[in-house]
Length: 78
Image 1 (cartoon, rainbow, N blue to C red):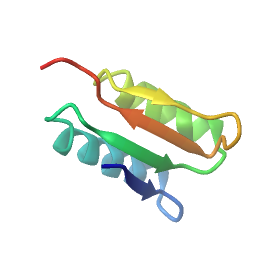
Image 2 (image 1 turned 120 degrees about the vertical axis):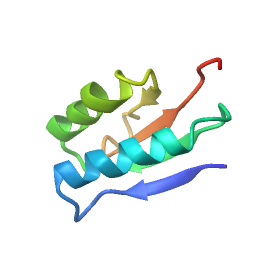
Image 3 (image 1 turned 90 degrees about the vertical axis):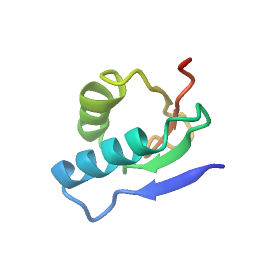
Image 4 (image 1 turned 30 degrees about the horizontal axis):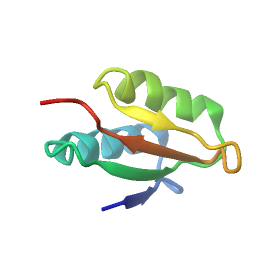
């Protein structure tokens, strides 16, 4: 099931905590499917990628048609 989280209105630090916590708590069944609404800030998206997604080996995609959204999945094998 796809979940959507909108980070508008949160500070970068608050957002990073919220995203990491959600991903770690919801990635045990290898069926994570998250639409993360970040806004069009490449600097903020790089923080998410470098501090969370790479660290925990999540896959992500930023579509060309809407660069303010990241789609995140967990396809790791347990």
